[in-house]
Image (cartoon, rainbow, N blue to C red; front, top):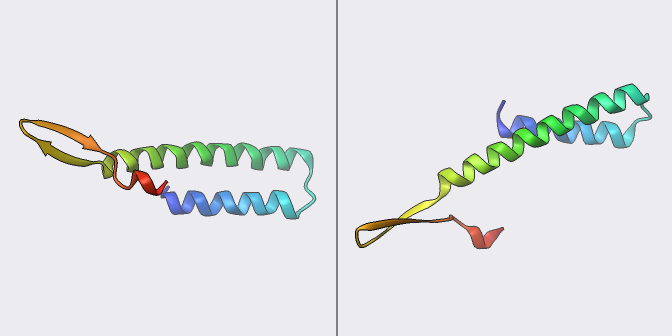
Length: 72
């Protein structure tokens, strides 16, 4: 599942929970699915952040500097 797909489904779940009177069982099912999607999205964001780090050469050593950290 791609990040955008997971985020879109998460938005659909939130809308359904907010805008519909649902039975308790259905609400719990949607909540559980939403929590799984949140964990998936968090994992994807963490992996993306690691990939976006820029390597800066300083002498013989390399150090990493987060990309765009100021923007968050």
